[in-house]
Image (cartoon, rainbow, N blue to C red):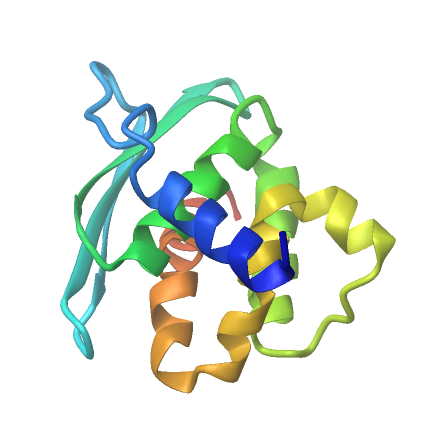
Length: 145
């Protein structure tokens, strides 16, 4: 299987991941993220246990890239300290903006989300990929810093 096929398969699989696309019964935080250029709109919900992300989910509509990126982010942040989650958002956004080099450390930190690196070559899709990450960053900035 070539890298393009792997990317496409993973993108489709994650964009249809219903485990992360649901409402939480008692979210600690809820934040709307909207991309007016394409119409993607998500509501990110976070359930906290102290400063640890106990659970996360999203609802809304978006393209495959937006949904996949959101789902990958949720899988990555569950169980993480809020400050670790903030660091991951900075790494992911830096990768998409080509400000951070993709190396073994970044691959280990971001896991499957690294497959979205090539979105940086499609300027019209960058906002789709970073929507959830900016939404999470907004939650953290408003409530923890």
